[in-house]
Amino acid sequence: MTNLIIKNARLATHKILVNILITDQHIARIEEIADDKANSQDSQSNPAAASYDAQGNFVCGGFYDSHIHLDKACILDRCTIEQGNLEEAVEETGKAKEAFTEADVYARASRVIEMAIKKVSSGCVLSLRPIKKQNYVALRR
Image 1 (tube, one colour):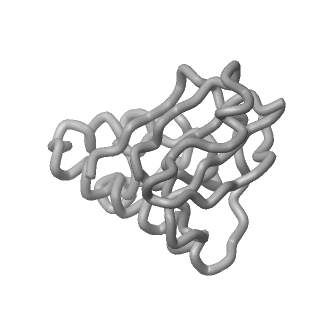
Image 2: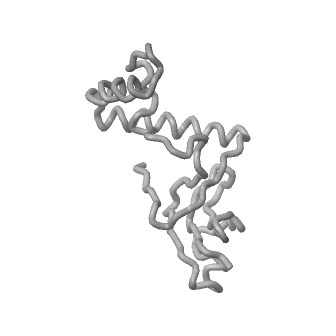
């Protein structure tokens, strides 16, 4: 039985939108959908399944690091590394954060996401993390 259906998702490996059917925290099936047919056959036969409408946005699995702070990505050039310990990292990150702007954070986060997409496009396999319905994140276009 399908537990979750992610509808109208864009994947790097498909030219048209898809519905992603999740069963027991694993991708059970990916269905390509026609523009005029956004509902999955499984969602019609299984109304108890939770659903999330991706609204045509890109959907991908967890990146290499399942815990990443995109606001702190790509800042090594702004930090001095002498000790190489956690205390220094926290201190240097704090100094770098003082100069962060929304545009700066957005640009660096976008670079990380674009690098991850390129890795997927070149055939690298990313690990999929279990999906929790309450932890969805929306990205700006």
